[in-house]
Image 1 (tube, helix red, strand yellow):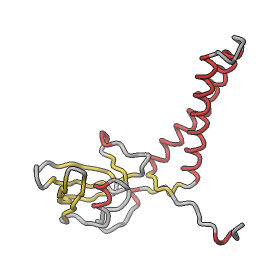
Image 2 (cartoon, helix red, strand yellow):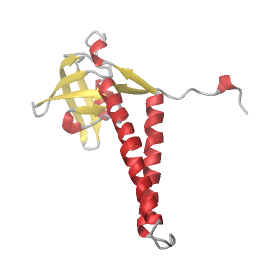
Image 3 (cartoon, one colour):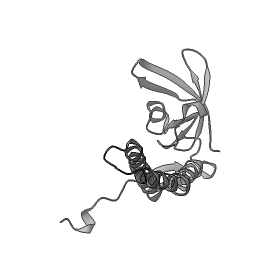
Length: 167
């Protein structure tokens, strides 16, 4: 067995305040609504007798496994979370985790605005991109006025950074 000092600490998972709150809300719903509901469904299916050919029981047990797995996953993420309040960042105009960045596509001239967030928070429809996405990786460390090259499967795209905000 390795000495404790040799064991690497868990990697911190960056989350915005909103992302951490969304995970807490999901965890609360899973524990107070979903878990009791599936327990009741299992009890109901058991009352129908023979479990060997009971599709309702099998489905409820599968659902219970999913719920318990998701609870453990969320608890682990929250336990290892590094919660960042973008409004408190002082990155001197640099693109960092939590920043909201307005870009101009150099080919089309279209402007887009993204907030760089954690993997669990990413939702392109809401303008939130994962810190591990190709676009975010190309932006990190750059300033307004810089051009970021994004290597994507369909080729390289260039974006000029028009604005960096921390909100």
